Image (cartoon, rainbow, N blue to C red; front, top):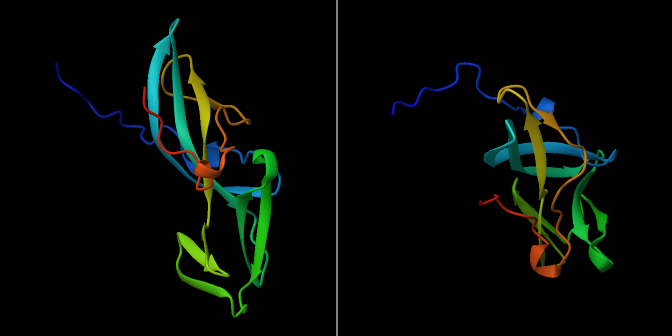
Length: 138
């Protein structure tokens, strides 16, 4: 069996994935799991989002009580902020990622043009998921 790369790659880009909330922006789409079901190609992919940034602040999502997302905004000039890596920061000794990820579903009748749902199919809810949901495995 020979494998050929689809010439129209990538199949999905950031502009194809709408944010799950009005106050969020999509930073990345990663490592989908794929299968076919009744002739339809289904993808479950990891989507990384962060709050829309506000000048003078560093903002991220945190898991609040009962798994609800809350926005943490820290003034860039705060003496309690340590931010020397774009992936994470420390604030008052606590480590935070600059984005949080969830799993999202996309479907395609022909396996090339995908329609992406707005709602995550799996969203972090528990303290051990405070950095988000990682890549899907099927």
